[in-house]
Image (cartoon, rainbow, N blue to C red; front, top):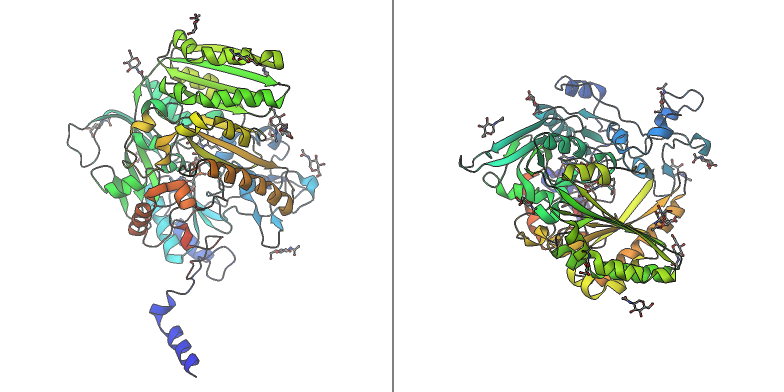
Length: 570
Ligand SMILES: Cc1cc2nc3c(=O)[nH]c(=O)nc-3n(C[C@H](O)[C@H](O)[C@H](O)COP(=O)(O)OP(=O)(O)OC[C@H]3O[C@@H](n4cnc5c(N)ncnc54)[C@H](O)[C@@H]3O)c2cc1C
Ligand SMILES: *[C@@H]1O[C@H](CO)[C@@H](O)[C@H](O)[C@H]1NC(C)=O
Ligand SMILES: *[C@@H]1O[C@H](CO)[C@@H](O)[C@H](O)[C@H]1NC(C)=O
Ligand SMILES: *[C@@H]1O[C@H](CO)[C@@H](O)[C@H](O)[C@H]1NC(C)=O
Ligand SMILES: *[C@@H]1O[C@H](CO)[C@@H](O)[C@H](O)[C@H]1NC(C)=O
Ligand SMILES: *[C@@H]1O[C@H](CO)[C@@H](O)[C@H](O)[C@H]1NC(C)=O
Ligand SMILES: *[C@@H]1O[C@H](CO)[C@@H](O)[C@H](O)[C@H]1NC(C)=O
Ligand SMILES: *[C@@H]1O[C@H](CO)[C@@H](O)[C@H](O)[C@H]1NC(C)=O
Ligand SMILES: *[C@@H]1O[C@H](CO)[C@@H](O)[C@H](O)[C@H]1NC(C)=O
Ligand SMILES: *[C@@H]1O[C@H](CO)[C@@H](O)[C@H](O)[C@H]1NC(C)=O
Ligand SMILES: *[C@@H]1O[C@H](CO)[C@@H](O)[C@H](O)[C@H]1NC(C)=O
Ligand SMILES: *[C@@H]1O[C@H](CO)[C@@H](O)[C@H](O)[C@H]1NC(C)=O
C-alpha cells in the first residue's frame, strides 16, 4: 500500500517525472515530428530539407542503381567528395550502426557482399544551413520536438561525432563566406585593438581558407590533409586545431580572435575576449558539437614566409635496426623543437618517413639540426638500412604546403584511431620504451607542439593543458574490410585499447587530442581536457541549458547513455 501510494505520488508529480530517464526522439519513435511539422520547419528555411544517405547508397537497389555506382571507385577515397555529401563520413564505419546483438546495419558499396543497404548511423533528415537564421530555426525545432540533433560539417570526425542513428542533422558545409580584413576590430573592443584577420563561415575548408589568405599574401595556422578537406571553422578549431605552423604561432585556438555561435536557446552570440569571455574560452578547445553551433570564426593571419624543409626516408630489413633509428629520432625531438622545426612523420617496423620544416630556415640550419642524426642513420646502413635525405626550400609556406602537405589520398576505409600527446620528458628520457610500444604497429606523428604552443598560458584557452607540455601528438589506427563482423572489429579494438593503455602507463600525466583519438579512452574527461574539465562542464551547463548538444566523449556526455539519446538518472 505504502509503496503504491509513493508510486502514484511519483507519477502524478511533474517535477519528479522530469528527473526520470528521458530520451531524445529519433526516427521511428512515436514522438518523432510529423511530415507536417517538418514542412512547417521547411517554410522557415532558405533551402529545402535534406535527406542524407550513406555513401554507398547509390549502388542500391543492386538491379537498378540510383546513381553512379561504378564511379564510386574513383571518388570513394576523396575527402572533398565525402565532405560534399551530407550523409558521407570520412571513415565509412561511422555511417554504420552496430546493434547490441552484433548485427551491423550498413550500406556497403560492394554489392557482392549481399547485405541490404541500411541507413546505419546516417541522420535521416536535416537542414542545409546557409546562414544564422537557418540554424536558429533548426535549433528551435530540435528543442521543441526534443529530437536528437547532430552537427555535420565535413564528417571527418574520428569518433563518428558527426553522425547519429535516426538523428536530425544541421549541415554547415555550405556556409562558405570568407572575409579578409587587415584591421579587424572585435565586437566590444576598443577601436585601437586591431587584427590582421580573416573571417570564415562554418563550412569553409582549409584548402579554401589557405587560398584566400594566400591571395592577400598571408598565411594562417591550419590543418593538413589530402586536398585540404578538413573544416577550417568547425570541429577542428573547437577541439584545438594543430598545424605545422603551431610551433611558430600556436594552436588553432590560440589564433582565434572572435567566434559567432547559435545556442540551443536560439540566441546568436558574438564571443571574444570582451564579450562572453567564458564561452569564448570554452569554445577554444572544449570540443565540437558541445556548446552551440559555431557560425563563423575570425583568425589572425601572418605575413607569408619561406620554408626550409628536410625530407627523410628510410627502409630496414631488420626491425631491430628500425627500432634503433626510431629511438634516436624520438630522442632528438626536443632539440629539433627548440631549433624551430615541425612537421609530420610515419613509421612501421620496416620503414620511416618524415617531412619537417622550419619557417625562415636555411640549409646551414638544416645541416646543424640533422647532421648527427643522418650520421647515426648512415652508420646503420651496414646493417641493411637504406636512407634517402632531401633538402627542400620553398619561397612561401603555401608552396610548401601545396607541394608536400596536401597531396595523397584519404583512405575512405574503415578506421579508428588511438593517440597520445607525448611530453618533452618522455622523448628525452624514455624514447626507447616509447619506440618499443609503438613500432610493432604502424604509426604517424604530428610534430606540431612545442615552441609557441608551450609558451602560451595553458589557462588562456579551454584546450587540453597537456598540449602545452607536449612536443608530438602521435596517432595509430586500426582498419578492417567492408563486411567484417562485430567480433572481428572488436578484436581490432582490443589491440587499440592495449596500445592506449601502454602509452597511458608511460605518460600518465599527459593526455590526448580530443579530435584525433579513440572512443575507448578511459577517464576521457582527464585525457582530453585535463584540469579544465570542471570549468568546461560548468560553462556547458550555463550556455546549453537544454543539453541539446551531445557528442561522444564530449563535455557533459557522461550525463547520457551509450547511444547519447537518453539522459542517465542514476
Ligand atoms: C584526413 C584528416 C586529416 C586531419 N588533419 C588534421 C590536422 O592537420 N590538424 C588537426 O588538428 N586535426 C586534423 N584532423 C582532425 C580534425 O580536426 C577532426 O576530424 C575534426 O573533427 C574535423 O572537423 P570538421 O568540422 O571538419 O568535421 P565534422 O566531422 O563535420 O565535425 C567534427 C565535430 O565537430 C562538430 N562540429 C562541426 N561543425 C560544427 C559547428 N559549426 N558548430 C558546432 N559543432 C560543429 C561536429 O558535430 C563533430 O562533433 C584531421 C582529420 C582527418 C580525417
Ligand atoms: C561516373 O563517375 C566516373 C568517375 O567519377 C565519371 O568518370 C563518369 O563520368 C560518371 N558517370 C556518370 C554517368 O555520371
Ligand atoms: C539484431 O537486432 C536487430 C535489431 O533489433 C535485428 O534487426 C536483427 O535481426 C538482429 N540480428 C540477429 C542475428 O538476431
Ligand atoms: C567485394 O566483396 C566480395 C565478397 O566478400 C569480395 O570477394 C571482393 O573482393 C570485394 N570487392 C572489393 C572491390 O572489395
Ligand atoms: C555572406 O556574405 C554575403 C556578401 O557579403 C552576405 O550578404 C551574407 O549575409 C553572408 N552570409 C553569411 C552567412 O554570413
Ligand atoms: C574591417 O573592420 C573595420 C573595423 O571593424 C571596419 O571598420 C572595416 O569596414 C572593415 N573592412 C572591411 C573591408 O570589411
Ligand atoms: C605497415 O607498414 C608497412 C610498411 O610501410 C606495410 O607493409 C604494412 O602493410 C603496414 N601494416 C598495416 C597493418 O597497415
Ligand atoms: C622570418 O623572417 C622575417 C624577415 O626577416 C621576419 O620578419 C619574421 O619575423 C621571421 N619569421 C619567423 C617565424 O621566424
Ligand atoms: C654540417 O654540420 C656538420 C656538423 O655540425 C659539419 O661538420 C659539416 O661541415 C656541415 N656541413 C655543411 C655542408 O655545412
Ligand atoms: C656505429 O655503430 C656501431 C655499432 O654498429 C657503434 O658501436 C658506433 O658507436 C656507431 N657510431 C656512431 C657514430 O654512431
Ligand atoms: C622505402 O620504401 C618506399 C616504399 O617502397 C619507397 O617509396 C622509398 O623510396 C624507400 N626509401 C628508401 C630510403 O629506400
Ligand atoms: C612488423 O610489423 C608487422 C605489421 O606491419 C607485423 O606483422 C610483424 O609481426 C612485425 N614484426 C616485428 C618483428 O615486430
